[in-house]
Image (cartoon, rainbow over all chains, first blue to last red; front, side):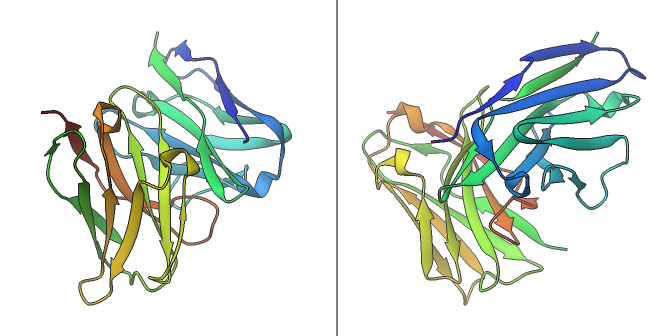
Amino acid sequence: DIVLTQSPGTLSLSPGERATLSCRASQSVSSSYLAWYQQTPGQAPRLLIYGASNRATGIPDRFSGSGSGTDFTLTITRLEPEDFAVYFCQHYGYSRFTFGQGTKLEIK
Amino acid sequence: QVQLQESGPGLVKPSETLSLTCTVSGDSITTFYWSWIRQPPGKGLEWIGYLYNTGSNNYNPSLKSRATISGDTSKNQFSLKLTSVTAADTAVYYCARMKWLLYFDSWGQGTLVTVSS
């Protein structure tokens, strides 16, 4: 099974700063099958990025995704107050979906 | 725009069967893939399984064949049954759509199911 490990577990930053979140796969995966989600308290996850680097409909361009192989990154430039949330990466492979454990982005 | 809404009992007794329904509007369950995902309180996300074309399924092996997902095209709903539940099955259960077998692009708001006697 492919395991996704996200780091850091918690990231403390201030509005206006840049956030860099990491998702590492236990083996090389196709970037086509890598997605990122944002979850705010009490809400369902929201798709941000698919295919490792493609923004979903309506997602602001301050969100970007990159990476390949085993290492993927979600970058948020110029943090807005509404960006403080939990972020999950997700992969599809071997007929199953797996999620990372999440990174909590909190206000410093 | 597609909308999904989960419904079902919020409390289930240990060893019994958890049953949830997802009502879909703005799209047909005969197209695309329709999934269930759960999230224990304060924890991460776990994919349960999906339904495709109302007759094809795939499930997370970790659930050891306890899950069944079926569809009702007359009501445009799909359902989850999870047998022999324990406290470990306590979670918020989400239904979600996949246009392609890659990612979940639309989600329901989620429903909390607690397993307790």
